[in-house]
Image 1 (cartoon, rainbow, N blue to C red):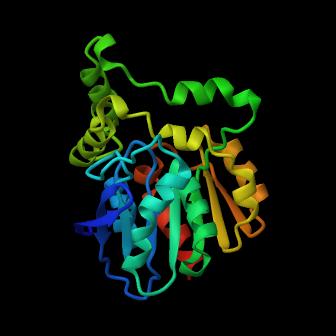
Image 2: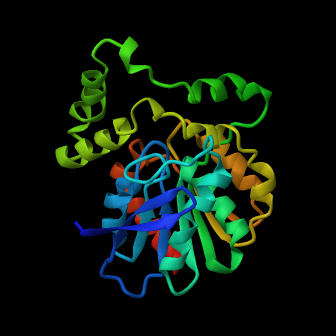
Image 3: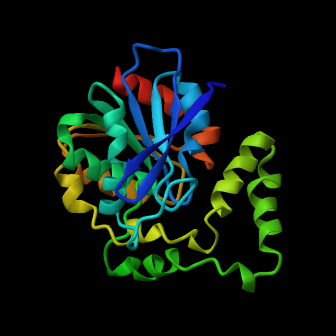
Length: 261
């Protein structure tokens, strides 16, 4: 696998913990990956290794080793906190966002159009509308580990042991640590996605955009988001199953590589 390097940058929240994969494909345009709640930047390690190019990511504020935002997380707040990533490259970068990270990618592209070449959006969450009210409320509830019977063991079983036929042990273990690392604040970041009205920002995207819908519960929202983006090219990949950036890393890397040229 491609080795990663880590560093810290200052941002509005304090410090941003950055992951960087050098890669071997020097001709590949720089790619900044925006992770989903509640994971950190190393969520993209398998994908970055498959891509082989220059990839940067960071732990979202409040997750991994990045300082939390002072206020309740929003897509706008996450965007401002992740902006220092754009300063790490000397040319406009592509953005790749998965799940809640896709919303941050959209916002960042609109706010900093000269620094963003294009977007790759994978499984976009759309939680607007009255029919999604119950889902929005449930997303942000703390896990309340104290009221659960042996919660860490059950999560370890589901996220590590039950995935060993799909994900190597060390990799599954790292993802498990990221998932539980923020404790009772694990779901706080979902407020960003749950409170974001995606249609307006999606309609303002001017960069070339590849939207990828995998075999997931977010398929309908992803197709809806793609219909709003004037420049969107939608690709449905029902052969890519969860966990998409592990089982589908090679396929997603190939799609991104072709899109970025």
